[in-house]
Every structure is written in structure tokens, then in C-alpha cells.
Length: 332
Image 1 (cartoon, rainbow, N blue to C red):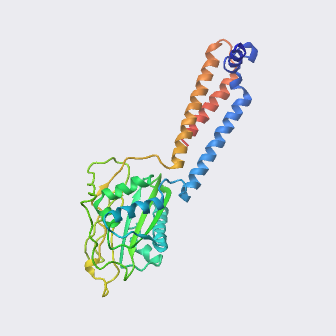
Image 2 (spheres, rainbow, N blue to C red):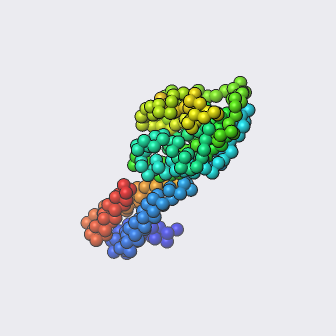
Image 3 (cartoon, helix red, strand yellow):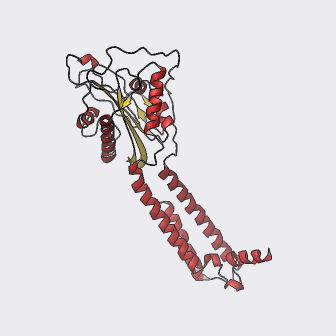
């Protein structure tokens, strides 16, 4: 025990034995502190810039989302949706376009509608719809938010849809890291049911829409209407997710009364969840730098005030420089 006490004194307390320069603030330790801090920051920045684009660290699971949607449909005596690769491609193309062009809307700043992506993906539809979500990092949370919105729920529970595509991707929109979720619904000509399948609301009441939710998560909705295909697009709102239904040009099987465009008059917001791996990692590293800065400040204060008449100026200057570096890394 006495040996440990002497060892700690040599590490932290300036005294004759260590040349009035605590070993914890020696030239070599300070060098490695600084090098380690820089390497860690470079590694974290690399992760944040590369891994989010893969979507690997989003907690939103496409398969889990599909399971939740089909469970909700089956509880209401509706047929389950099957995954369609072309619809998934349309969802992925829409996600990429929103990230690349920095918007979160059904219609892009260039005026491209959701149905453009269906066409590019080669999906010929009789009915089609789209749900969007941003800033959700948990599968159950985004699903519940959609179900709490009457128009999103209408898309999820529509008997007109037979297939679904899901895309989940992390990236940066409006200068902050987020996760986008896109659902594309559809049924191809000849596959949609002629009449709606009866639902069973008495078995499972549909929750009402929250009127005054927290202001951080975003969905904006769509309710079916029956204008002509050139009807005005949705109104602009800052926080959103959306849903809609549409049919192609009139044919013997489809008429204009089946066409529906999005209406974005309703907003549902959920509380912020720190659920993305890279976001958590960034916060953890910032906290680490703060604690490290506090450690250096305390060590330097002990070095200065324990033997205030004897100062080792190179140690003071080097430690002060490292404190400045550590503080700067918190904000990078």
C-alpha cells in the first residue's frame, strides 16, 4: 500500500523525485495523449462519413417492418403484402434522390413525382402509394407513427395493395444525420381486388392521431382523394412523412375516380431517439474528450498549485496546448 501511494504521488504530484513534473504530464505521455486523440477523431469521422451510407447501423429493420405491416393487415382480415423487388428499387431510388438533392418531400424540387420512380423501376401499377419517414431509428417507433396517422394507416391497410417495397438508408439531410424510411405500395393490373375486403375494427381499434406531439421526428401524411392526375401537389410543411395512392391513365379497368394524390395537411411527430450507431458513437467520443479535458485541467492545476514556487514551464505549456486541442476536437 505505501508503494502504491508513492507511485500515485510520482504520477500526479510534483516533487523532487520526479523533477517537479508529474509523470502523467511527462513529454512522452502528452505526445501519446495528443496522437491518440487525433487518431480517434479521424476514425470516428471516417465511420460517420462512410458507414451511414450503407444503412448497416440503422436500427430500422426492413423485414421487421414488413412483418408488422402484415400482422396489422391480417388482424383486419386483409391479405398480407408480398415483397416486390421492383417496388424496392423504386423506394431505393426515391431515397437516394432525397439524400442527393437534400429534400424530404413526395415531389422533388425538380418537380419529379413519386410515380416517376415506379416507372424507372419498371413497375406497371394499377394502384400505387408511398409512405415516407425521417428521423426514426427504431422499427416499432416508425411503424406506430404511421399507424397513428389516418392517411398513412390507410395506405398500410388498403385492400387495393398487393405488394410492397421498403428502403431504409442513413445519410444527411438539411445538415444533420438522419435515417430515411420509404414504403412503396402497389398492385399490378389484374391483381388488385375488385371490391374492398371487410375490415374488423371492433377487434382492434385504430389509435387516434396525436395532436400536440414532440417537435423532432417527422412524418407527413397523405389521404386519398379523387382529382384528375394534374391536381395540385401537396402543400409545403417542414416536418413530414407521406402516403398516397395513384392509378395510371384511364383504361377499361381503371378510371379517374380511382386516382388519388397526396394531401399533406396532417403532421405526426415522435420523440427523438438516439438510435443510430454512428450518432451514439459521436456522442460517446465527445463525452470522452470532455472527460479527458477535465482530467488534464485537474492534473495541470495540481501541478501548478501544489508547488507553486517551483514551476516546470515546458510541462505547463505542453499541457495547455493539449487541453486546447482536446476542446477543439469536441466541436469537430
